[in-house]
Length: 421
Image 1 (cartoon, rainbow, N blue to C red):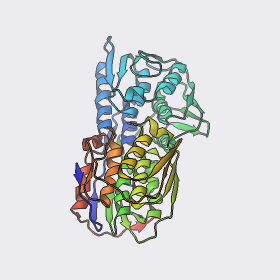
Image 2: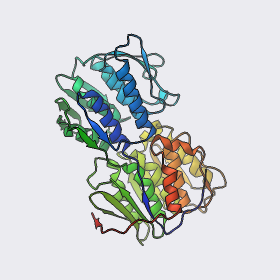
Image 3: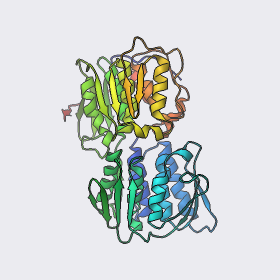
Image 4: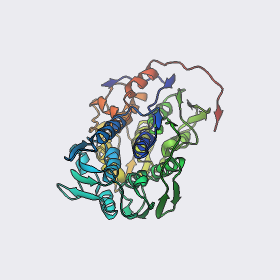
């Protein structure tokens, strides 16, 4: 796909997908609860659609005496949440995935589940797919230790199946916690369901069976919104409006509203929507940000800095190595190909001043939806940016390219009175 340069002045209303993170958490919780919970505004992302399909397959297969294959394809969240869920679901389950998912980290979660008396065996290399799980109706132990240096999703996976622990659940943490806002998201969702959660720096304790009202509405995805913050930052007088985003969000990536202030993007809220407006403001001489809690924003911010030629030091990127691709290496390689000078120091990406960017070669996406969407941001300043395999955006934002076309066409939005927060 070849992207034309976007106009520098535009006014557009963008339709965002619902939060994939919240959707997947509510789907697993709903499967664990004996209630008629209705989820409104579920994400249409491929990962969430897959989660729905697999949970339905599990429900229909509970009485089977033969092992049932549960193929998680390339969905890391689906794999981790279902590893815990299936361990507490009677039956025999063969958990599989594609080549990339098979090497993504899962061993810390497997070890914790085994310590809780789950029956899990790795059929190939230890700690990797495929997994054979003999599920039980509940766990006989209630205390586990979990290494948190690879993913907060391991802890979230255990927390979401708290109903399978008759005596409650305590998780002691080892190592530095990464992506902690996602752990707090899980905490808030469970508290909304009446679960008592005691959270500290080194442990979390849960007690109670989740019970919830019959209606849940899921807010829009702040990570998806970050790409349009980027387009606004690269514009001259761009205005973008997006619905179902809130200043008091469960999503940690809502921090983009604060971060992009420095890049001249003003955020205003009403109770139901947000408006971004590019304002005249000197760019920072350099930028330094820590992504330990916000890894999904790293590619977006890196591309904005490269496009605006702002030297930057982006730290806390260790978890990018374990995503759909090695995102840290992929970022560096694609930046090198277009002339955006950079260096990697362990888990830090350093962007240097460059002379001129060259888009004569297509941008590789490495099978990674966030590589495709992040590098599309360059079309805010450059013509003929070509993205290879653009369809990968379906993993989290199926209508992404359609929304960019709204900016290209300057789709108008009706003026409304809004207040800054």
